[in-house]
Image 1 (tube, rainbow, N blue to C red):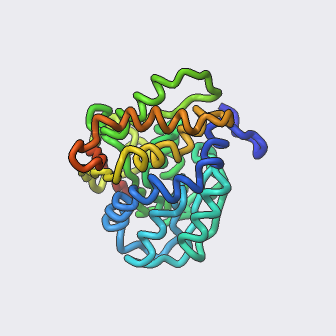
Image 2 (image 1 turned 90 degrees about the horizontal axis):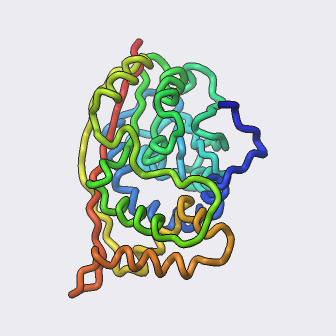
Image 3 (image 1 turned 90 degrees about the vertical axis):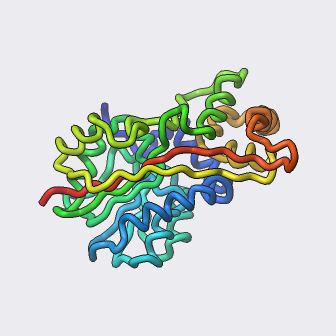
Length: 275
């Protein structure tokens, strides 16, 4: 696979550029709980630079700073608008616009690499683990989160239903929420971590319940992501997509209150680069 050029704007990248403001105010807020748990596992941080990979609006950096502080931090994302949001959210951090599978950083640049529901979208996760190990200092830690298996993630089921029922053609491939990490601690994970020179420190599994006041709010949060911007393809179909998403959320609606709740399993991973 050839490295991407700076002017190579893929549909999914453009989708996240368009969705960045809605994601920051929608689903990104709900994911703050997972970012906080990840920050707890990694704190206190060593006195070396921190990289938030596929940083989105900077939720993890924001959670890390009050817990331990850090001398230097970098938010990296392929969306310029996301990087701009991260710099505002985690004041003082640097911003780098780069594809997470083609990172521009020198070996042993960081004491900590962190990613909340970001690196799960790597197109080559085995290779990415090698790269992250390379840019970590000896003894440095890599902490990230991942969704559980398809049958364990209600939000993922809703997402798949909307995508599968969308009647229009669209460009690009919508990345799934599931990844090789969805099984938690596995033979695949152990093997590739060890091959990259990383030792598994801990794997923690938990559940998060997304709560929305009604199906309208739930649909807006879901549609406000780059994955669903692909479906609209700039054709002004947001109203239709919202209606379809509302219908998909209906089975999770409490008929007495109108509130929507979806339980999702996720995993937190911490690996340490061998000295």
